[in-house]
Amino acid sequence: MTAPLRALARVDLGAISANCALLKRTVGEGTRLCAVVKADGYGHGAAEAARAARAGGAEWLAVATAREAAGLRTAGLDGPILVMGALSASELAVAVEAEADVVAWREGFVAAVPAGAQVGVHVKYDTGMGRLGTRDAEEAVGVARAVAARDDLRLAGAMTHFATADDDPAFLAEQLASFAPWAAAVRAEFGPEVLVHAANSAAVLREPGARFDLVRCGIAIYGMDPFQADASAHGLRPALELRSYVAEVKRIAPGQSAGYGRRFVASQPGWIGTVPIGYADGVRRGLTHSGLTVAIEGRRHPLVGTVSMDNVTVDLGPDAAAARALRGAGVTLLGGSGPSAEDWARRLETINYEVTCGISARVPREHV
Image 1 (cartoon, helix red, strand yellow):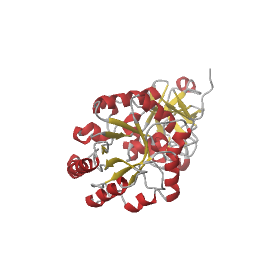
Image 2 (spheres, one colour):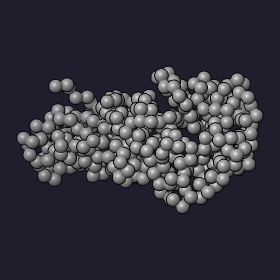
Image 3 (cartoon, rainbow, N blue to C red):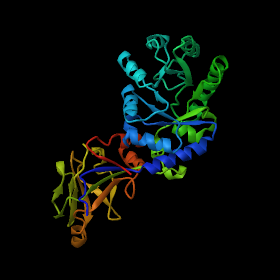
């Protein structure tokens, strides 16, 4: 039998492909799917996730940084890649070298694109997110004109980003009402080859009118729920499992404790298992005394004591023989038979995005 790893993130690439295929069916043939693989594929592995997304029907890839785009090219990914984030001059050069499309909302940025760059530019109109992009619709059109005026650049897209598609449909409708006529005017002036895009995963699932020519899906391709509830309700398959094993089993008597600060003190005799994974791996300290249970040999056991940097402790119950039999057993802390990313997120008062992005680089990824 293969010895267990201290920590392992197992990524089901078939699930990513299946989720992309489902999203493609949802948006229909007239809309292209862009798979967002920034932040190392939300912790799943960028290049591997990108290949799986392409296998599931994604035509585009999107990242946040120029280096992420360059990494995909180095890994052998071809086809269109969109860098969605802000770019300094040096980062812009990296994006150009990677033959990635970039996003603009100021004419000064367009002027800074090196002559002969031959890149696509997507103009961003800020309809309510309040981060990148211009809030001025006329300025956004001016940026589009500046791009179109250059022979070496291609006006590739007109875009916005929704702030509340996951939790406030009314504001989503406001943004859509601002964006749709602006985008129509851009296409009327510059031609139908300009891709209009706005929808993230939540907007794709909630508002068919937001799908336009292309949708940018991130969280859903990894099988997590953009509404922070139940991914299976949308037919999505979670792709990631975080695993470890029971490294030690020991008896605990009333009055004895486990973990830093003695935050768990036994009130009755029992058995404690130590699992060699902790917050340096992404098992957040905030899960201490959160009620989270992990899966061991088909049964759920609660985390007890303080989550530390390299270890967590688990209540194995009062049965000595059953507890001792679990020494060396595999533990699923996230995904699979264990708790979901949404379960972690509720207990941490955060979102599932942060859960998988927080799995650290010291945890090896196994792609299957």
